[in-house]
Length: 436
Image 1: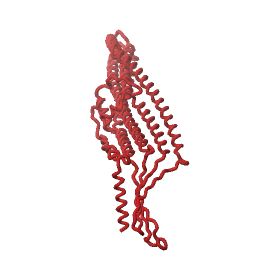
Image 2 (image 1 turned 60 degrees about the vertical axis):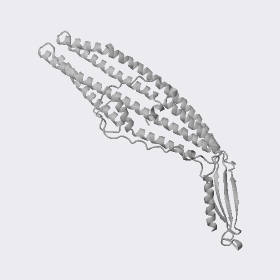
Image 3 (image 1 turned 135 degrees about the horizontal axis):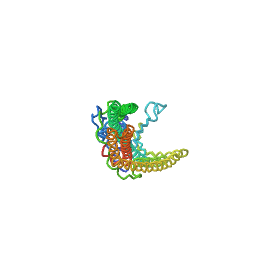
Image 4 (image 1 turned 90 degrees about the vertical axis):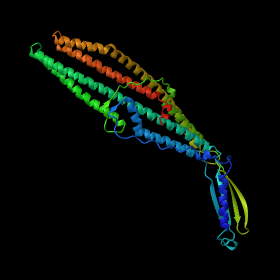
């Protein structure tokens, strides 16, 4: 009978703590924390489109990238840790049975005293607030890491697509050069057979054809390699058969180094270090526990309430070492943030310089450069066929035209890579939030 009474008393104490006022316990929303995150989207599989544009490549990369899937999962994990940080400590149920199985009047259970109590750690030393602040800072940092992973992936796709477009254009140029060298060899043979050119000129034309054929084979291999490298980002073995369109991007927005993702992440890590310092200080503060219970005296059948208060005495351990370590951590985080800012400013400035130079080269070559080289080649071909100029002069004109085209292709690639760098630095967390 007394055991049932003690059990009923314990249940009543637990219910009383569960129904405690908000001043002593967390509200329902605080106890529950934020809603559990939804399952991260699955990674897309299957073959790539046969014809791939830059915009489609960016879309496919985001849908297929295992790195982005892992970064999303890390954000969800940080949300779970924040949810856990909002919970208060659980109450502790204590049941004590005294004065039994002794001698004399305490033999058996005649003089038994049963005490049922519930103890609650008050958590008034700032620990809960400190761990919530730390979890919030870690969530913010993880969101920035996801944003950086997405921005890095976009830059990588843009650079490899620019490489693929450059390889595609170089292949087209190599085919044109090879066809032109083959035609020139045919004409040279006819002139040699007609006695209008010495045999040495025919051999020179055949050597130029061999060089053009070798360059064509190299360009073919480079083009296939570029498409395979692009496909590797998507985790597929079969590359797209063709890259469609150019590598042009919209003009990059104005980039503020202070607003870049790298600097924001460094700032978030500094906030984490400060939160860790506050948490270390809170761990060194007093954190008492209080309890309330009921004692049942079997001999007389009486009951009495009991209350308890326990306070740790910070005689030896006041968490001094962790506080000192956390203080040094904040200094290190501040130094890293300043270093990231300086490096980011340099990267932005360098990308702008490269972009300006590449734009100037593209403008010059697309304007008069290619036109003049093409016209010079046309006149050299007419002059050679009319017997007014030598084969060497025609070969020089062909080489000049091919070099101008190759330089234009290289300038376009440099421009695209500089644009990709600025787009990477201009990416913000807001761009990422809209995609989640």
